[in-house]
Image (cartoon, rainbow, N blue to C red):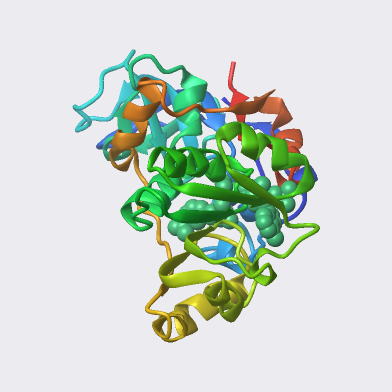
Length: 321
Ligand SMILES: NC(=O)c1ccc[n+]([C@@H]2O[C@H](COP(=O)([O-])OP(=O)(O)OC[C@H]3O[C@@H](n4cnc5c(N)ncnc54)[C@H](OP(=O)(O)O)[C@@H]3O)[C@@H](O)[C@H]2O)c1
């Protein structure tokens, strides 16, 4: 089969389209013919080995040689004990723990697969897992957004932000989206009440306070975020620099206490089983998935460069013919 492989951390040029052995499903594994695979910031980070946390499991060389985690496709074959899915069934999954989606086929444990939601295309389903889980848990489960609250989403113009803005609006919040200049209009189109261009303005110095800050691009010291929290407010770090991650882990509990606020890292529970409420909202037409660009398997390097250089508004999806 064809797969996009890499053997060392580096720029998109380190990726190449290669002929590799088609995996055989063993035990409870299911072989899926990949039809669509959506890109995430984690693919870009694991390609380059930056930030450092992306090297967990492979400090010097990549642990996985094929990236791509959010897949949708059709079951091709099942291992001896894999009884939940039959060949011909349409499925989708988040396979972040093993990767391998930038390929024609991938073999995955049946436990991570879910049936393709009815009414959804492969590309819509592939767009959901990682970005959807971050948004759902950040806004609803851990963010606990209520009507009338003020929510700031830092990095709101990307994949997770696309769902997070819409979920926060559905929850009745007043939403501020922060991202780069070319994404301001996109955030407004998703429903953001206010937008801030981070290349021109530092929201932590604007003197405004929020009930929830969902930080998809955390690069500031915790004291700066604390200054932007309302009393009793929540700050959730999802991604960004290792320095901010460590500060939130070590200092967050103490720093937040003064204002009765919570400052913590959101460890996202990944897996299609956690996405049910979001899938229902998508099926009801209340949440939209915006697919900015589609690429072919041979174009994965260009697709990752487009995402990594910060041009993507919403999701970028690779369609595997
Ligand atoms: N905590 C967990 O369990 C967990 C699990 C999975 C993933 N993650 C992390 O979640 C993060 C978000 O993922 P995503 O898929 O939404 O990423 P994404 O699609 O790349 O979106 C991130 C957005 O942040 C913007 N941005 C970059 N620097 C910024 C800054 N200084 N201030 C404000 N915005 C900035 C980017 O725009 P520009 O590039 O144009 O600047 C981009 O639009 C990633 O870092 C990923 O590693 C965390």
